[in-house]
Image: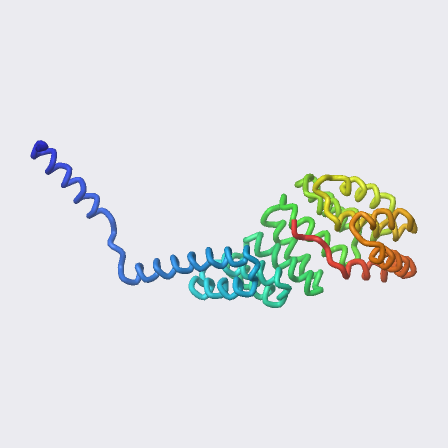
Length: 271
């Protein structure tokens, strides 16, 4: 049996600790429970999105937002998921509401800018990417996103400056170098575009998209044989013939019309 004084002293310490902790009110307990449920729904929503059921995930993110209207996180997740589902208008609305809650959140600005590009509003998108750069001047996604917006607005030189800045921040991200190369092609500098694309097409991390962009630039430069050779790395013969015909149609366009036709395929701001 322990010493009585020790036992009493130990009990007094526990009592003091218990008295020092504030007892939550009923309202606080209800609020904590609500936020806990919102977090649980967010976890389920994220798992659902990873499983590929985008529309169910969107419904869950909406529910999480309705349960916690003070957090931008459910809205940003909703914006991302709606964008992936090509529900661009809902994506834009979600990001806009997230920005209202968290004006300095770079992720919300970047997502909103990307969605505005998908909606064909590059000038408004540029404003969002610039605001994201105001928050974080070394954000390569914001710099590249601004480059895409400027390319869509016809300012290829300005776009190339933004891509180069992004590449300095994240030289390992191939999509940034791809964007620079495509911007060079849009401005008519096919040799420089080919040099950049040929270099990254040989990288182990290069995708079929990068290789086919190289084929496109060879086609724009009139090097049809090289365009076909690169095209066959990923496409069958019928697809290569269709692409060669497309390149020929592009070469026949004015520079402005050619640029608009190519940019109609969209820019890569995802990385």
